[in-house]
Image (tube, rainbow, N blue to C red):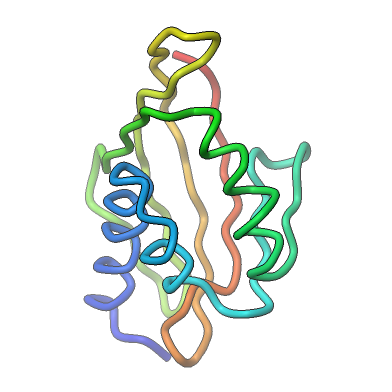
Amino acid sequence: MPEAEHVVAAIKAHCRTLTAHDKEGWLALWSDDSVLEDPVGVDIYRGKDSLATTFWGLVEQLRPMKLWLDRDVIVCGNEAIGILFGVVTRDGQLTKVGPIVDHFMFDEAGKIASMRAFWKYA
């Protein structure tokens, strides 16, 4: 099981790499068979290939964007909750998004195995 410090660092890297539009850096955080549900109940992306193509296509549409942690990450074993806010581009305008509650699960190698994102427009 990954140490709490590793989990927190990975979640901070998740925010940093999305903000920097660093596709390769962001993908390196994920396991090959990861599952991303963003937002919960709407879209599910299975596997790193889906993250690299379908999900990243959505990231491209939201650019420029910025995500940041609003509070300390809560870590319990190999799971964590990050509370974030963000600014994304929608219809050519910057739009605030948040709060965002991301529930992460990590595998034994310390990679993100799954993430479920709960969010609304602020």
